[in-house]
Length: 261
Image 1 (cartoon, rainbow, N blue to C red):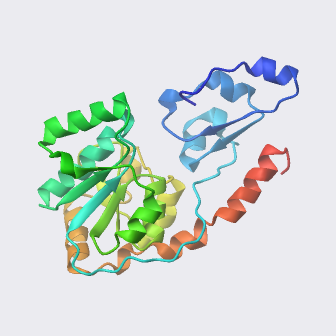
Image 2 (image 1 turned 30 degrees about the horizontal axis):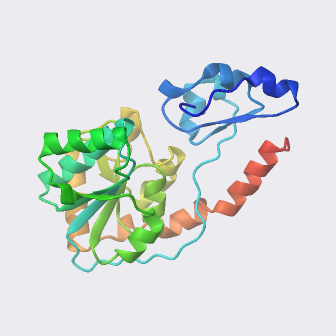
Image 3 (image 1 turned 90 degrees about the vertical axis):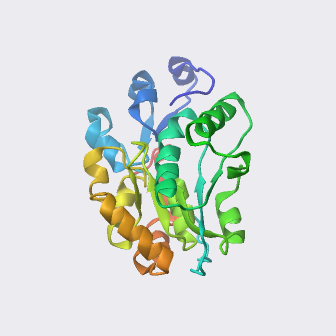
């Protein structure tokens, strides 16, 4: 909803153009005028429809993946990696990841594109706050290609949203780093994956986060299990491949945009 070139919905309709809106991020960036005029509205998470009456009946089209085999196996890895955009709205997620790693004395790296004024400003702010050297910032990566190559290097992957699905499908333990920021990081677990996926792997409200991470003690216990190689409860590949398959979601999308049911 935010960013991109301006357009005139009335002008589009004059020429018979049907446009849609995909609601993905927090409502702060939404243009409700566009939502009301759109031919269709899609939500990335069931949460949006429950929170915003305008979206109660909008179809939910969650993030999805084409199948890839799991590649990660525990082998005494020590380093964690966080993958995200270096953008202002992602700073709280970076902070949640960094602070958990610092408290646990875990070596870590941060992956994200470094080009552009905003990315450079975010990098500079994180370096100043946490005294991070340049080598911690490893630049932009293709998540699944990168994690496939680096399976023997990283102990777990941190992120939010699509990154959790991509890393989890490859077999990595996944640290969900909520945009609530410091203190709101937790490991995705098999027994709660269905609910986490319903929130697009990006829970925001505190009552949602409490479903997955009751308190810091459980997060610390989960971390100890990951470090010891007792990772069975965090291996999400089967659940992801069963519930996040790309093809049925694409077929659903085609029906929606062409006016079908």
